[in-house]
Image (cartoon, rainbow, N blue to C red):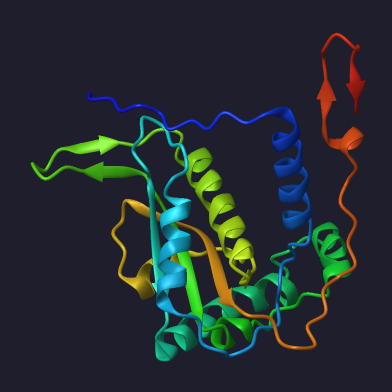
Length: 228
């Protein structure tokens, strides 16, 4: 494989710290949004977010993802109707355990998913289990869930960075997305992202993120620190 020179930028420690603090401050303001405005979002912004997501590392550099962006209102309505059927079974027809429903109570969610029609874009990310070459050879992809998960994280961050909002929506099961969007059998729905602007009076749960000592453990010359 040919190689290129890595365009790495050397920074002094003060600049590194400034950038790290600025980035943390920016992403700490991110929240999942369930109340979207119908204000249009230019397709170019969605394209750029997908391109950013596609910079993610992946197993054997197979890039095992497909981003399907839906801006057609009829198709969005069909997706909402199918998703709400699955969500109604989850919330009201016994598919979810009582423990799971209690865990969701602070978020105030139910089977109604109006945002699937209101948001100007729905982006469905598919995990590509195998890739077919131009010669017809079927190649297995590796670490697909890990790779697609990283790409989705970058996608969320890219949207937030450009002033857009989203939500990680995962109706279960999600097979209807493959059918409605005409995707092949080697692709499996991973996450559905509504993309747009929040309504002017948008409110979100007042959640607290775990502090560093609960999510990290350090083994360094200062001694082990962090959670058990």
